[in-house]
Length: 241
Image (tube, rainbow, N blue to C red; front, side):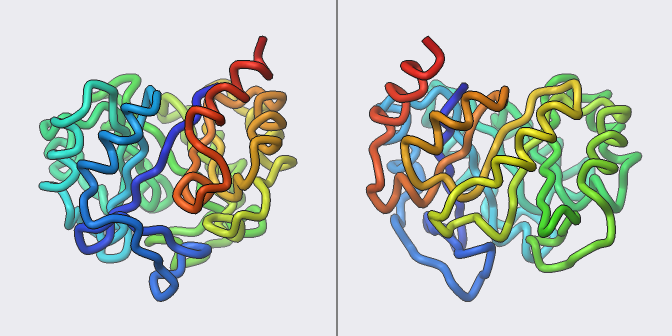
């Protein structure tokens, strides 16, 4: 299982939100590139980048920053946030992003997701962002009546390579992941699942390794010093041994 540091970018800075609330953000760095280099130096094999301005406004606002991050690293970057048409997806790919994370369009434009999968096989990740099991979109600001498992099965048929599941009520809270839903999703679909939201301790990472997930995205716990990335990597290696 991979431990994947998160870099959420808002107005060009590295921030963390509480439950996705744009009015409850904490700035941790004004240099995303230096932050990314730091995670790579500490052993990260993959970096997760979110353009928060893009998620809120519907188009990527921090692409030059994301491109600079991708260019500065030897490890791959997966990125999401405001990617809601093929032109935006193409631009991000050309900027050096290895994986494209699609959220809102999975619900609203499934044909676009299928076309992106055909154009970039193995590189499309669908973000299943959910509150009480129901999909939320537009930067987690709009709720739907769609069950996340129903959407997941539809997206498997569309050709997505993996899912990123976030219980938005736990994201940034340092509570704990939604282990039950994460495990159920990993069992329900035939593609890899990445867990996100609520990781607060090394024990949480150990427990996630038992659920069959491909990776765990960690943000607040690393930024607030609950544990270090080398400690997290060592914990996962021990759990998988």
